[in-house]
Structure formats: C-alpha cells, structure tokens
Amino acid sequence: MLEIALMIIAIAFAILVVYLVLVLRKVSDTVDESRKTLQILTSDVNVTLHQTNEILAKANVLVEDVNGKVATIDPLFVAIADLSESVSDLNTQARVLGQKAGRAGSNVGKAGTAFTVGKVASKLFGKKGV
Image (cartoon, rainbow, N blue to C red; front, side, top):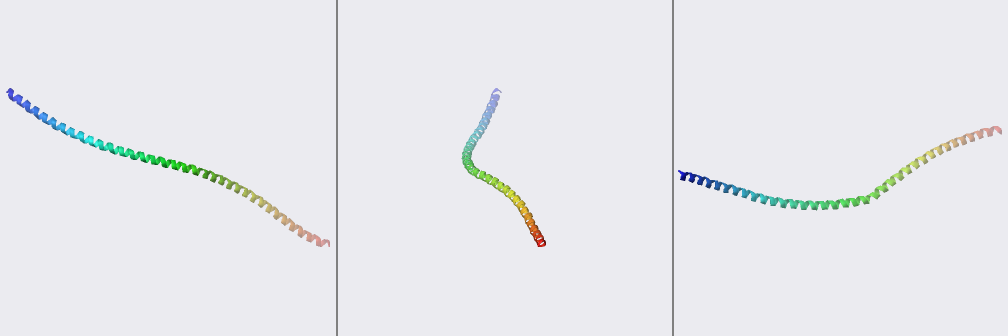
C-alpha cells in the first residue's frame, strides 16, 4: 500500500511540474512580448519627442520673426497716432477759423447794410437840401 501512495505522490508531483513548466513558458512569452512592445513604444516616443523639439524650434523662430516685425511696425503706429492728433488739431483750428469767418461775414453784412442805408439816406437828404 505504501508503494501505491508513493506512486500517486510521484504522479501528482510530475503533473504539478509539467503544469508549472507550461505556466512559466506562457509567462516567459508574455514577458518577451511586453519587452518587444516596450521597445517599440520607446522608439515611437523618442521619434515623437524629436519631432516635438523640431516643431518647438520652428515656433521659436517664428515668434522671434513676429516680434521683430512688430518692433518694426511700432514706429508706424506712433506716426499714425501723431498724424491723428495733428488732423484733430487742424480740425479744431478750421472750426475756430470758420466761426471767425462767420462772425466777420456777419459784420460785413451789417456794414454793407449800414452802407446801403447810409447811401439811401444820403440820396434822400441830398435831394431835399438842393
């Protein structure tokens, strides 16, 4: 009976060893696949980082170019602001001159009317005195 018990234990141990070998082989295959996937992923990440660095370098060049152009345009905006101020001053002076001309025209009109009245009066008074 002892021999049968030992034989059952030996068979069970052999089955366990075979099962563990199969499981370890699957784990080993999974680890190998994971390692390959990790290498591919690392390679892809490196390519992406390299491309990102190139894009950032180009963006920096573009930003510097835009900043240079904005610095070039700034004096133009200052000149436009000065011109706008000058035009505003010119409009103010033209308005003042127009008001003065209007007053002068009114005074000329009054003077013309007074001259005409004086002329008529002179004719009237001049005829009576003769």
